Image 1 (cartoon, rainbow, N blue to C red):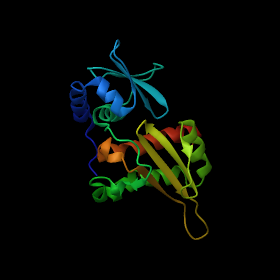
Image 2 (spheres, helix red, strand yellow):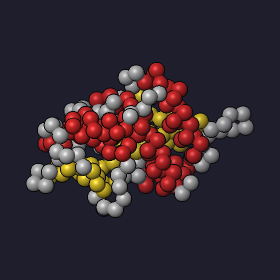
Image 3 (cartoon, rainbow, N blue to C red):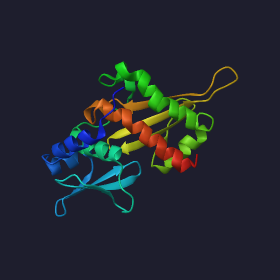
Length: 204
């Protein structure tokens, strides 16, 4: 699967961001916008990011570390593309997203397999780490947690425990409204970022 080419994607995202209507974008994305300062406050993976308008510069609210390019692209894409649509309350898989069925194999290699590799033998740590990101345990599979990656983008991480015959397995689920808020390529990137954050929180 050809994931986003980050440097051109970042340049394009900043150009698209620079011409949005900030108040309308904030409403659609369910984030705050400070008109006086020209700053969006965007919750992302349990932290708050400050995005300046119109230049698209992004910093962490608490300061300090640089924001990686992958995260910058996803944040800008969300502000540009988030639609005027609420959550559907119904799960879909990656293959159900636009063109997702073409790339299920690579997506499984880059997202589902790492999920099972990290948390398959310790699924309770998945729930614990997801809750530290502000997520909620849900009744799917044997162990599952839904993490609000962005305000309108919940992602659910599912583990089925293994037994003597079968190894642990997993899946990643999206809300059916997902295509209204980001492109499928973004949904290929976000689970990996979330798994990395949960792995770090779990101390694994």
